[in-house]
Length: 131
Image 1: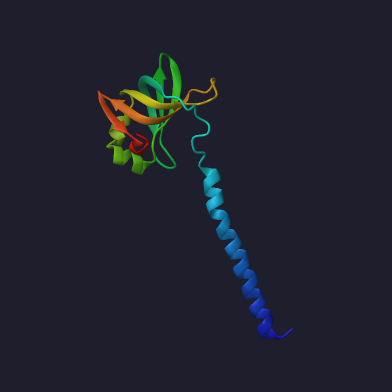
Image 2: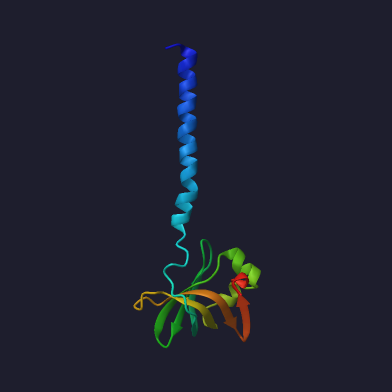
């Protein structure tokens, strides 16, 4: 096979591998973020005192003490919290917080996906587009 043809075929093969890998990136991202399938459809509300918070991507986690039980709350991504008007100070340990959202379908799991956060009587809507 001529040198020029070999180089051309290597470039075509390389381009095919790169294109194939690029198509997998959106699929892997879709599987990486779990969405809402794990949560119940109905609204769930819970109030407790913040134990600690880990804010960041892909979403923040707030740990609450609710009548002696530890609950995990998924709050928004940093941009979503900012848009709602929430700051890190809102999630300080000891603050009382009410969460309105969706509880895990697993009754043994104390996990809630927050749609609204209520602190000192003020509501912060993480998903205003959901009405």
